Structures are given as C-alpha cells and as structure tokens.
Amino acid sequence: MFRRMLLVLFAFMLVSFATQAKAAGGQFSLYAGYLNPGDLNLQNVRTGLDLRGTGLYGARAEVDFLKIFGMEENFGFSPRLFNSALFPGQASDARGFLYSTNFIVNIPLSRFVPYVTAGVGLIKPWGSSLASFDTTFAGNYGGGIKLTRLIGPVGLRFDVRGWRTADILNQGGLNIFESSGALTFSW
Figure 1: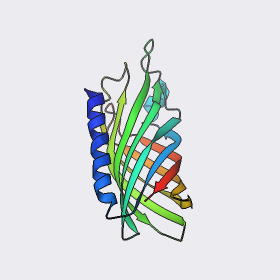
Figure 2 (figure 1 turned 120 degrees about the horizontal axis):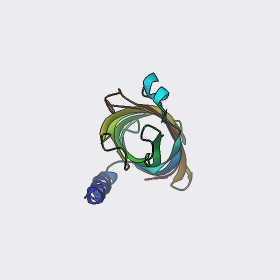
Figure 3 (figure 1 turned 45 degrees about the horizontal axis):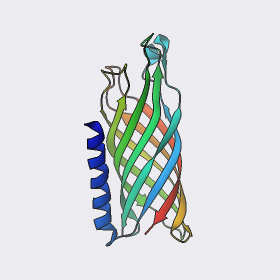
Figure 4 (figure 1 turned 90 degrees about the vertical axis):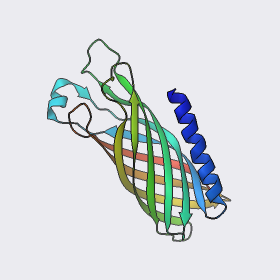
C-alpha cells in the first residue's frame, strides 16, 4: 500500500514538472548527503536516545520562472533516520523518507547561482519499534550554490538545510541538519 502511494506520488511529480518544463527553465538533481537529527530534549539524551547522523539520497526537481523565483519538489531517503536505545532488545533503527515542496529565490550570476529556499513537507519514518512515531509534518529552510551548465546541461549543486518537525512522541519537535551535493541537469 505504502509503495503504491509513493509510486503514484512520484509519477504525479514527474508529470506535473514535465508539463511545466516546456514553458519555463529548471533543473533535475540527483543528490547524496548527510542528515543529522538534533536532540529532542535533555530527558531523551539521559534515557539513551542516540541521534547519530546518516546518509541521505534523493532527487529534486525545480521549475523556475522569471529566472529568479522557482518551485522545487524534494524526495529523499535516509537508510537510518535515527537509532534509539529507548527500546532495549528490539531493533530500533528507523529508516525514513523526506518529502517537501519549496519556494526558491535564485541570484543568477552567470553559471554561479547562489539561492535561498524554504518550504513544507513530511517525514515518514518506519521501523519495527516506532509504532507511535508516524508520518509527521515538517518545515525546512536553507540555501546553497548551483554551478549550472558546466558541461552542456550538466552542473553541480551544494545545499545546506535545516528541518523542524512537528511534535514527535509527545517530546517536542526534532531539529534536523542536512547537507548535500548534487549532479544537476538543466533545461
């Protein structure tokens, strides 16, 4: 069921961007990076919640208008969103999907394009010990640098973002730091 929902969502993203791509410029990026959750609170640190960093892999599709403004869809996967010792004797590694829609402000300086971004989305963790931690609303903000059309339509992109989730396990929101590098394809 969940896999079908993800496939439908991915197909919808591709169709919506393909129809808009004829009228505007944009980029498709494949990225890899680092995701580091912050502490929920001091009590969780005392009880053994281990929020170590992990890898992050995904794709971003951006459609620009007026060369300065754009909209972006992000879909990322983390093979270990966090690991917790709160559930002794149980496997507690949580994998997760991160999805967001962002507004982007580009500052085009030829092939060098600094930008800022902010948006909202969802974080969907799963694992055997996380029944009470389900999909949660999240906001994100950040920025980076795009090096566009270095070789034909191919370029590079470097991002730094912060994520803030809604309440998790009745312990407050979670702060997450993300940094990534991407291979981009411009149209």
